[in-house]
Image 1 (cartoon, rainbow, N blue to C red):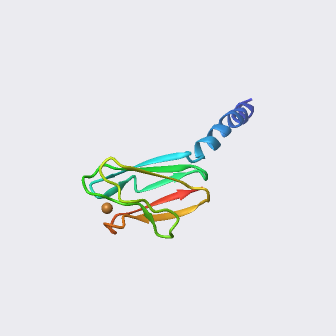
Image 2: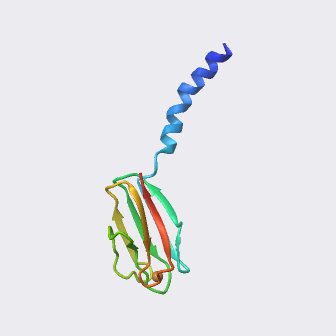
Image 3: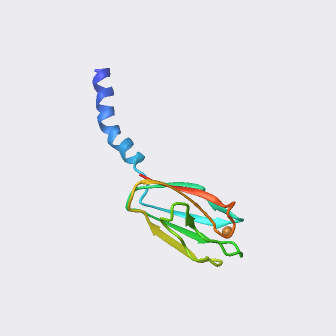
Length: 106
Ligand SMILES: [Cu+2]
């Protein structure tokens, strides 16, 4: 009986675990104090990421492999990119190249 209950618990719980591991469809990144926050986000393929600049200084969002490139974002400007293909996309601010972060698409 105890084993049966354990097995039934697995059957009920496991789909929830699988769903919890699915990355979200979209993510929001804030640019603040010369940092991308969060620095690493993971989304599902076909999903999008939106960056919003909260600094008084302009910033850009430019992937190292040329997949995406924003214009200079002034304060409160946003840039959204939709990621069709899975991969790891490292990017930086071309005005302040020390500002680096990564988007992972699964
Ligand atoms: Cu910058």
